[in-house]
Amino acid sequence: MQEEYTNVIALTDTEGAETEFEVLDIVPYQGGEYAVLLPVDDDSDDVEAVILEVLPAAEDAEEDMLQGVEDEALLDAVFSLFMERNNEEFQFEQ
Image (cartoon, helix red, strand yellow):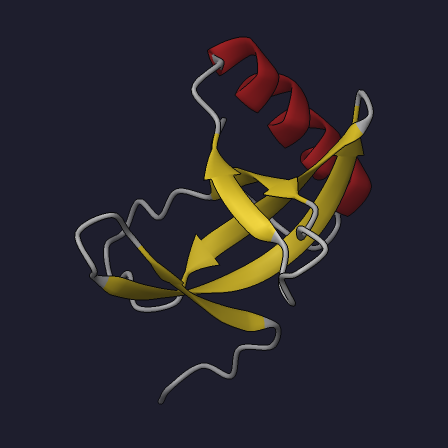
């Protein structure tokens, strides 16, 4: 049985490969916003959430941009805040 996903977006990496993600939450943190995403087609037993920074769209662009975050402390802080906001709904290993 296939799961139903809501809020699904398709992202293209630098090599042109497209992957679909479900947007679990947009977390505001220290003046920025961070998208917490879950890969839709990941069949592994150890699925990891992906956290990307939301960059506002430029005046001539229609969509916001998402950018990777390399700061481990920032990722941990955003994920902790995500878990506080959604502790009843999601169960992830930290």
